[in-house]
Image (cartoon, rainbow, N blue to C red; front, side):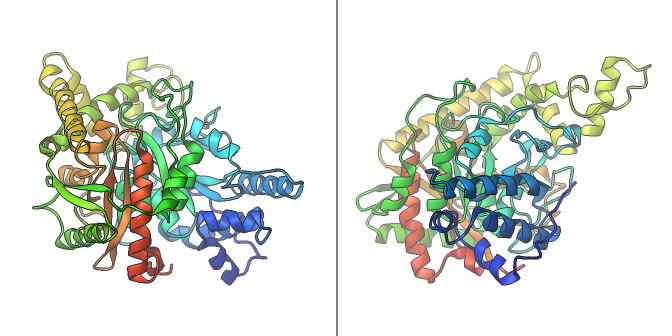
Length: 510
């Protein structure tokens, strides 16, 4: 499936390494100053992909021709004196759950293998309008169902920190591409933590915006009330620039909310949190959390205190029910959304021999086209929505969702942001939890509450545990996304100063 470019004969290995290690902001600044062309930045990324992606397997499709054409357009218009956006010419990896003209959209599934969407997702349209260069599509758990990217029909992606371990999921391809210096930016999607969990285990910044703050038009739906696209980047400032580029009301999306985009870029640069009230969530700690993860989180909270924040413990008692509620709501919505893959309208068709009826063709196609995790969730969701069980399961889960939202509202009357570890453990070995779905689901223990309530949340690198990155999660009230960047920017600067460098500088060279 993976389509890789051929390394450029004109780009030296040393020059490529230097360019791909630049942050998105630094790349954009160098292009704007004429120190680097957009074509050079794009070619360096393509050369890096050609060099390392046979090991990482982040990309499912590389659009070298389209990326270089977009980069040339940026260079030509800049030379003509046209004023361009703050990310003009910066390469980006796009999760393969968002439609994009000229590229296949598979959602990591055989059932959509080879399908080309006739339109751009709104997120993609806004990236193109911002002159961001789309390198191609990256790997993911099938239909965004998973926490390890092992559920992709096209094989697993590997963590650049340790290629025997998972990169998180479902946006594992997005995270691995950025952590492996194949792209300075990536778009992921977050249904129950699928941006933040990969960001944590790959040493990146990952943000789930407020639900409705970024358009879902063209995002192939898993769970319509939970899915949200957002940025993955190496720094808080880079994530803010990407967030600002894709956010805003979209009349094409009925779940999009018509409110001003929070001033995330400005907030990321302020870095003064004196007097800010920070709540440590009591329920997101304790048994099941790796001691190293807990120690890194405690150290990060102590840094917040040293920066002048007021830190208190906060109880959100219904967070303990978030995981079971999520695994009723999300599969129920997925069973409805994935009914469209019926072998009749688009995608794979199996068994159409002229004799089989429509139902038999549909059954054969779904059996061949869907992987085991997708089938598991469709069956679970269909059962939860069935007559006689709807009120007992799905209805009760929605009531728990309301209680979790009330917990957040009560907490935010006392504090400005909430914090917790992002994941209970560092990245686990590939294959370790494939046969134990419940153990896999526990990877999202800390991230799911924000999806159920719809509020924004960020994962920020908190340190290393046995040489592997772990994250601290910051949560804010709905449409207060700028608070994430305010706290994240201040904490990132302080932690980098303590280490003497950015965390990703310690990643093993591939």
